[in-house]
Image (cartoon, rainbow, N blue to C red; front, side, top):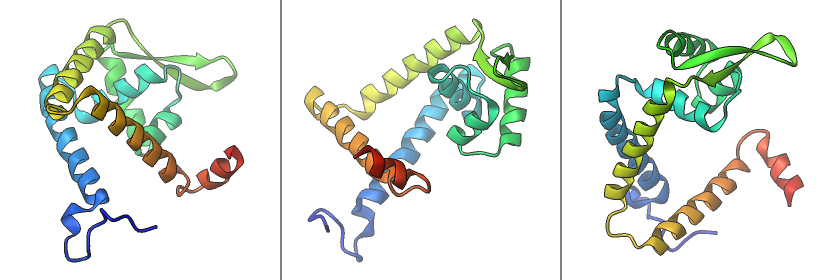
Length: 162
């Protein structure tokens, strides 16, 4: 189905994909600039945020979420452990594996990250009504769901869920 809002080939700068990617790039850049004074790299704050949402992940799962190689995450976690923000704990089900957990020292840093996120979104969404913000989130959630059906291994799970 071709949407009426889809751009012509002569006007690709107004396509949904371009607008999403460009907005995402700008948002990530602005957010990263606002978080840098906390002494964190983009990779570090992203890892902390993912761990705050999924404590107990192993390094391979975190690498998948960050879309990097496991060896890259190992070095990243080494730095976060050295900074006292993350700790590795043995996996109770697999003595060869380690699970990742945030330390208490990470809590104030994450609180500041969430504050920066809220401040950033208040600027980004200025002029949008609360209803429009909710509608945008709902539409993007549906879009993400549609996209997962195109990822390898996800199409069969999506079909089974219907």
